[in-house]
Length: 62
Image (cartoon, rainbow, N blue to C red; front, side, top):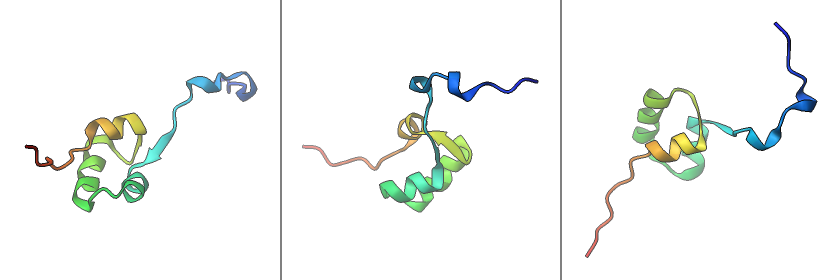
């Protein structure tokens, strides 16, 4: 197996991968929601995956 030359990689397509627990701590997500996200996504996920899977409490509307 050949290793890719990192100098030739296109960095514009790279995605930031978060530790789910760290992301939840930084954004103030409840501990129960953090556990659910870890079950659904695993230990690591992209920010887009996290944002699409977070269940926020319903806000009161008029």
